[in-house]
Amino acid sequence: MSFALPARLKRLDTTAIVFIALVVVLVLSAILVATVGRNLLSPGSIRDILTGMSVLGFVAIGQTLVILGGSLDLSVPYVVSLTSLVAAETMNGQTGMVLPGVLLALAVAALVGLANGLIVTFLKVHGFVTTLGIGLILKGYLDTKYQGTAGDAPWAFQLFGATGVGPVPVSTIVMLLLAGLVAFLLARTAFGHHLFAVGGNSEVARLSGVRTRRPLILAHVLCSLFAGIAGLLLASRLGVGSPTVGTQGGYDLLSIAAVVLGGTLLAGGRGSIWGTIGGVAIFAVLDNLMSVLQVNPFLKDVVRGAVIIIAVAVYSRRRLVARRERFTRAGAAADSSAGAPADARAETASTPETAPASSEGGPR
Image (cartoon, rainbow, N blue to C red; front, side, top):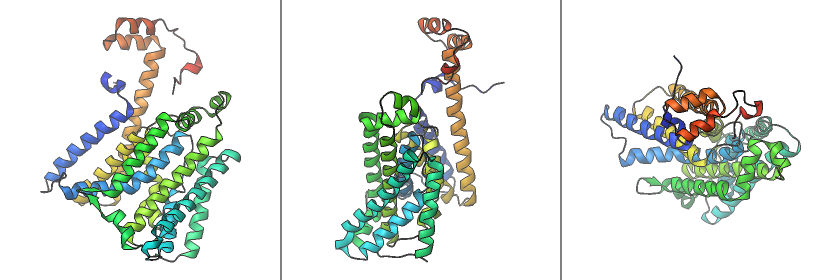
């Protein structure tokens, strides 16, 4: 017996599936939390979940951009650590140095992203190797110069990570606003259209007149900037900078996992920011659930891994079914059994039985 997906699920957008999965996870988590006498929807629990979303959300937004362009960024945890130190040391407990500290930290992050983008585009080194190398360089610098925490974030800056509107932290509001801005850039600007084109097929994009280097370089710069914002948030919460805060959080692999869970293709060219935010929310809810149930911390990664595998399996199955229905006679029979309109079945049935090899991948 072959695994089959419901017809309605096949027609749903990937982002819609992610948020449906989020609702299911919320309902199941609320039931499980209620068994130990706790309320998942209490203001305290909501605050914990949204707080857990903030840092990973910033990093995952940037990671989405580079993955959409067909690249990757493994240097983000070291950028997070570096910017937390730059900001905390520059501020040094002085309120008047908050703005210079923030601007300097973001400038350093942007330079790291620019280096990543230039190496990927001009030297033609794959993003995985490039960002791994840059990350190791940053790690060596951090391990050599710092033996522990450094700097001092003033109280005015710590308010960024400590205050909220009701149960909603200010950091989460900022993260969602920036997610909306990036979603607008992807949907309504030349940068977004070119980034999707480069991620879908760089050579075709080049032949179509797209300057393929610019969107990918900008994507890497923005990715590091968002990692820098995450570093600033952690510095505001800790009150100091830390050379290990990024690696301890595992933000490189977790951000990639959130992006994949949100439905973005690792090969690039297809995905959405809101799908990524849904993936981040699912991880935050699961982490809160396991903390309340006092599950062994090592099992968190087991649960995350299982969730990612299931999600990717569902997405892959949807794509395979869609291709088969569109390009083969078997798909016409499937459409007929699913109650597809007669004209749609006729159009599908008129497709040659042996489709060209280039059509097998379908439009991205």
